[in-house]
Amino acid sequence: MSDLATSTPVGQALTMAGRCLRVSRRQVDALIMSLLLPVLLMVMFVELFGGAIDTGTKYVTYVVPGVILLCAGFGSATTAVSVSQDMTGGLMDRLRSMNVSGKAVLAGHVTASVARTAVSIELVFLVAAVLGFEPSAGPLDWLAVAGVLLAFVIAVSSLAVAIGLLAKSPEAANGFTFFVTFLPYASSGFVPVHTMPSWIQGFALHQPITPITETLRGLLLGTGVGSNPWQALAWCGAVTAISVAVSSVLFQRRIARS
Image: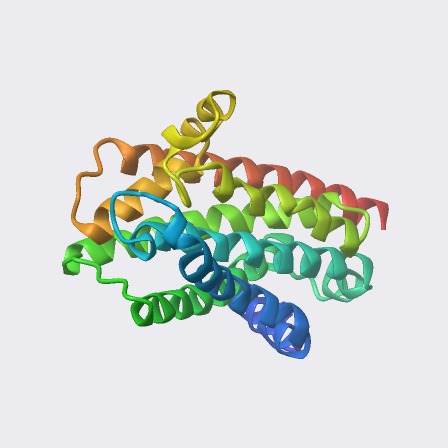
């Protein structure tokens, strides 16, 4: 990191992203959890529970979008913990002496989170194909899928950064991300919303994961998506904007107190 002080903000962010990825490689248990747990959950849902769940199609076809979104949820825990460790481990004092932008530090964490999640999503698609997933998406559909996933992962990663700054310890940061991981279960990701108890259907229909799931499902299977893409992007944009604003405030407060 010797050239951080003289590089551009983009260069600083990329340098920090590279550092975060190197740190992740040394934390083998957390890396395995964020990369492989979604894959194991998909195998469990499809092979153990899929035969008992009626979705009108092969369950692996139905469940893939929900498991893909879980990848970002599990990855958010790694990001939140990493941010919290940096804020409490003395790294910020060193970077501050090098005149490194706080925005570059936080952007580096988000970039690293996107890279880790991309690997996990690729593993999910590979295992899904082995289990019988046969998407009918064309090239433009796949491009749209990639765009929606990128927007979602950036949103979740930005939220994880804010959680990491808010938490007083890495353990607390890991615990706070539980809600992010829970959201896909209370959506259309794993079962149709109409099969849920009436008291939870309203929440499932009006939370961000459901329109994102329906967008991915429609694009991958070639069915209609309706207004879901616009709702999905609106949710992602709102979460990202709010998270970035909150992170900027929290970062300055944490730095001022240190």
